[in-house]
Image (cartoon, rainbow, N blue to C red; front, side, top):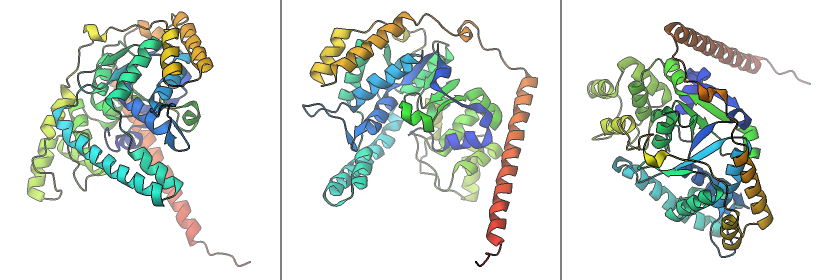
Length: 395
């Protein structure tokens, strides 16, 4: 699930933190990709006539089709991916997982009912809601990546947290995920939409979100940002009814931390916090997640030549893929392994810490942009109001 409406908060309050561009702008960079989130998106998006792709034997292949061709697109654009898989979920996440399972069970029932009585749109809608990444999906994806020569890591718990460790250590340029809690886990840079198809990327371009600019734009330190994310709603605690993005931001700005917010609410009774709300445990999971250090042997990875016979055996003979396309894809991988020596100059330099003056200038520019946006919204609202108040001319 990630953090509810965090992107909206960032977009509205610190637009300078977000850069949009083409995948080509990431040429020469190493990127840690949240594999579990990617597999889920492939199972949802890679379909034919609204249904997941299947082999001749009735096995789902959407996850493999997505992993193979989207990874090829990434590699073709000069990016070196390392995929990170989820391990066991933290105990605090069990409540959220139970809710997801319940929602999927209900969606499965609705899907079956829609098949009998509903429209094609109803069938597709409920079909997508039943999607769940299984152990078999993960194992097959890892087998495929190994045959492609693409490295992967299995995290102790949350993949996003492990991606963030690799990014902070400089082993990769950024963490790539659709889950905004990757920022809460302290990745310096988050890439979104990296694994989207080329067609979808035209409408939803690659997003590069910089955490330091988010914190500067919100005027918060990291712990306050974590408290904001918990208040917005995360995987570890139930949300608080009546607290949306504007209210959450205002409360953190006024009271600085969740302890003070909860204490004040005990007096005012304005909001109904869940009983025994474990926000301190949630904060600790973001501050001290169960991850492997960047210098751990499991975090050593390298890109290798593809195993062409192995890919043909797995994808063509076992899963029914087109042999010509698989061999063509393997040739693209081989070509990119040979030409991957070129890297960006930024890889040779450590990022320089901003001076106080630079931080102040960035904050001022951010405030000017926000003020300009407010004026624009007011002007648009006034124009709409004026248009409504004008008498209609009879013709």
